[in-house]
Length: 303
Image (cartoon, rainbow, N blue to C red; front, side, top):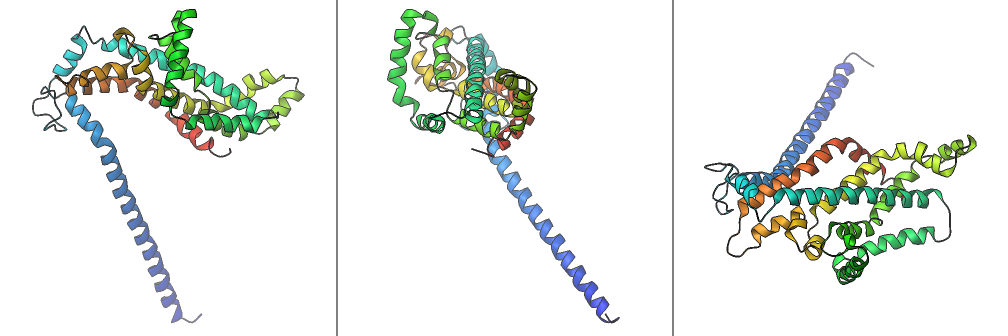
């Protein structure tokens, strides 16, 4: 290479590096703009609800993110109403969601482990059937659910209509389906050599499952747990149909009473209750967010 060609090569290389740096900067700027817009789109409804909860006008008309005269009047009315026991509703929702989540995790884990590790006739058909059942909406089985709880309540009153036990029973009945499919995919990512090594050491199937496999599936347990808890906590249809007494209302049904009155729609109080109801879900997600992200990504690797 001659002396004259070296500066030209260096100039070309410098130009290319500059173009690469410029492209990277442009890409970063575009990503940053998209991130800001997406964040604003996601946070705007939350900010509106927060502003409405501190707005003493108790209305959404002319509402702003920062109210003109913010106060705690809506929260005081929320907790002082004798006909609207907000803490009782919140406790009912937490109890129903917690118990349902634990039972759902047990049923889903056992079913997914069986479908992943055992080979038996009808295994694939069973998995597909559980998914197909989830296609039908809950409304289609509402009459059957009502008759089931009505007749079951004559035998076991705690599992009948207008009881939290009956509502938990309905939630647990739909525990499989997508949850079992997702957890099975996670089980498939765990090497079978671990099972074989445990059997060589003399461990039976239950010991292998509880002592070796179960500690490895904490991420997917967090995923199923969070999804189940949020789904049951925010559900409105089933508790609205099967719960009649205000003392056994869940939070979603109880808060609907503030906006279900045609003569007094209390949006401010409703917003305050909605923020209080978001606290358990937020705490649960913050505690399990690391496991949730890892389990959600790995559970979709295999089907």
